[in-house]
Length: 481
Ligand code: FAD
Image (cartoon, protein in one colour):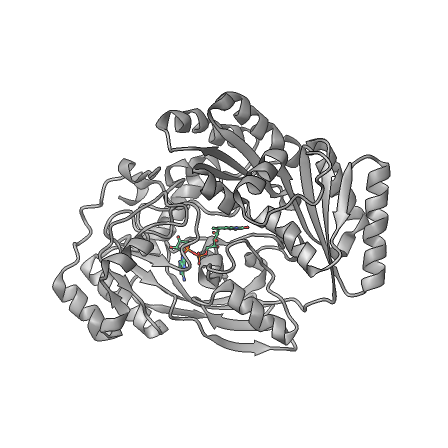
């Protein structure tokens, strides 16, 4: 394990679970939803990357908000630490216990509560799996404003708690704009009903935003209301090759100008990412096999008029070929081909997992400097590691990943703190969309000022004075122990 848990001490203020606690929870939830089975616990104690591992002895599966409230009220009074868990696809060690925290899984709270076809506003429970919501909306003629590679497992409550960005942010914006309301339970069991379905509501502090991106450190999100856009009839996907990073950047500028309102995704991967996917992901095939190019860009357009959208896209592609911004490219002819293009981009995290150990960095960096970091990292590490760069170029979001056969402290010390210092020097963010979790709790000062972190800690103290919610995560350990 490449876990950082060794650097953190268990907070001795937290109680240890006893038989009375288990009986109390069985009284609320029934025996079946109080899980002590070792095999089931192994899965919930281990994160998606198999990098972080806790040793919780108890997993609770509430089915109602009231049950979540009763659990938290009890845990708070007993000073029992808890970790809220959605689909457990988080990539920063936030969704698994560090030590023996009780795991509260939202998986059984998976009902869609209402959908308004006129406004496109969906209200659902936090444990709904993103892909299930997408299928539901598809039948209604709508789509989710967010999409990500983990859609088959991640839950909307987890998406909201991490403020997940994903593949459509360039078009629809972040969850801070699309989430209209949340219901959340505080550490002491108080239920905050902020489950509004209004686009405009300026009645004082908008507290729902505290739960968007706070990674379960301020409360448990139990319900969400979200604005969904209509499903438009014409979707096109192009997979393009560029000779250098500068061309990718210029292509983005052109795409924003020439495709305008129909641009719905602009993703990039370097040739090292392409090779990794081709080597490790079954079914992956390079649609531009003539020769390997240095960079690849996936562009998606979504609009309401098939012929004019296609015309617009073709004119853009022709112009970009003439200007030599793209060296080659393919336009998907059907939905299967479009999916095969997406597989190359969305399959990178899985291919990295199959390749061995991986050090993941999810950074916002001003576009012009972004790829310099990948190149500098490559020359720092030489042939000890495979350094790849890909991500949501349209949002200025780089996923820098270092792939090695095994975790190795020597390699880690070559990467960190260099990667954080570099990002901070360029006024970037050390977490664009994955969050802070356990991985970056002590690194937050690279992106936030001392004063800002102090206010964050005050909010934490106010809302969770015993610090039982997702301890050791998000805030520096010195402020929460
Ligand atoms: P979990 O992993 O279970 O939890 C994540 C955090 O939220 C934890 O801190 C947990 O305690 C907290 N949490 C979960 N549910 C709740 C709740 N109901 N109330 C309070 N706290 C809660 N992220 C992106 O932003 N963009 C991407 O494009 C993207 N792509 C990904 C692709 C893959 C293949 C994978 C594995 C991950 C990807 N991610 C991406 C990471 C992303 O953070 C998660 O996939 C997703 O948002 C987390 O949802 P989850 O339900 O799995 O949450």
